[in-house]
Image (cartoon, rainbow, N blue to C red; front, side):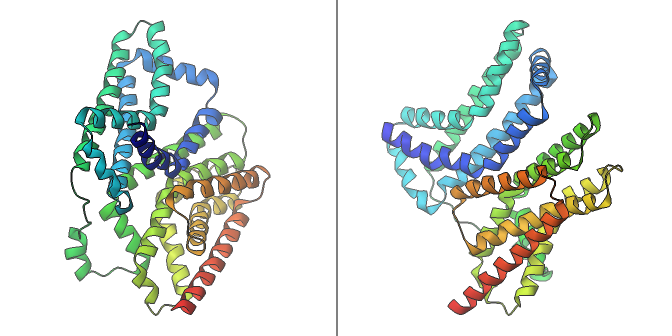
Length: 365
């Protein structure tokens, strides 16, 4: 039992945290940079004494667990993880207990914050709200465990063509720059929507904080960087989409056309953030800062995508690369390097790596 638990933790828990490193970095940014100690106490006290706020917190946890269930469901349907089907040889009680532990570890951030809130529940004698939170956490963990137990009994499900591909794409061909976006809306619509909602919420909090004290463009720059981190998995999905559809590399397209199409895709991918920045940009800052902020997400994403093409890595290692790049970008912003210059450098480096990638690819062909 210990062996299979270790296998599940390494195959599911470890990969979940590695793959979502950008999300957890954003959470740390919100918790320890945007909020002070008294803000945390005030928020937890409000949640512990208010039913609507408790329900809203539970809703956020439900979204987190839905994301976790989706990740685990995807992981067990990967062919290299087909060995997990042997897990069903254990009796059902053992299966449930092992998966319950797995989801409890995945849900540690929510469980830790629930423990923090519970101290205020006991302080203000709101035991009913505490019971509500505890019941939800136990219930959602159990439901997730039963769901994965059920899915493990089923064969690995092969992907099938959706309505868009079977009907619309045959009659309305799209330009290359929209192919990945079509893939997102047909295959990953919910996760894309949640990603964009979280990214815009983070930007909203950053711009609100900017108005509360004397800050310069660097605060908005760091906030924009962390909003990008929430979108970082979309860039990796773009890389996977490009590499899985290898026939695209055989099309007679010049490298410059491919590069422009790729950059256009990343720009369109970040249109919600671009529009938000355009309408909320403070009048006190110069236009050069606006230009840098508008271009930063797309150019940084373009650079990361091409670095993945030039030097591919597994999704489990992607979070590590993002972390190191984030550290470099934070120091660059804090030392006052204009985002416009950073964006232009990212585009130049990205184009160079893409040119090198397609040059090596053409030689192999």
